Length: 115
Length: 115
Image 1: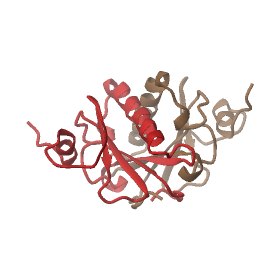
Image 2: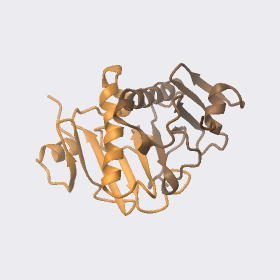
Image 3: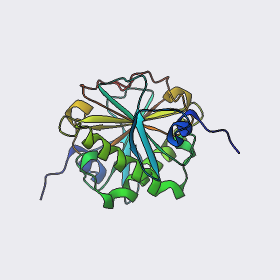
Image 4: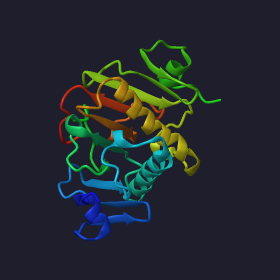
């Protein structure tokens, strides 16, 4: 068995986190080092390390991840003003935890370039 | 009929673009104002204005969009070092063209915060 990542432990409740959303497929929580007034991470419970590891069979899971992110953004009151969705892949992408996660950032004007 | 966006006109060939990938569902091209050594945009041909406009029926389309982005990143030689995927939604997200598009950025270290 592979060792659970920090995020998998948050999703299972083994490590505390500031939960925003939870269901059988996804778990969302607030970033502990927020980069915007609203900064939520959403992960699939399935432990895909990097987005580049996703396979054709993950298509519905990934589509659901993006749709769930829009639903969370709506609940967080970000829809009218807008927001940014970000997935970091690997070192140059800035990925630090190797459990696929999507960042939802809003509540301020996001700048360009995106990092 | 709604007027086609700049990106829809690129996908149809009405306006020239630097094509990277094309199939029945998706079209990808190089950003005219690149923010990294590799900066590609991928769009669904279906004209969804914003990611917040996507509906449950778009789940497979969105999952395919993300998977296709990983495939393009692989072809562009970004997979080993890593890359960043970004979707801007609305004004504060920094969206400038209202045809859903996903940015693929790589070839340099991406910074934090993501804009």
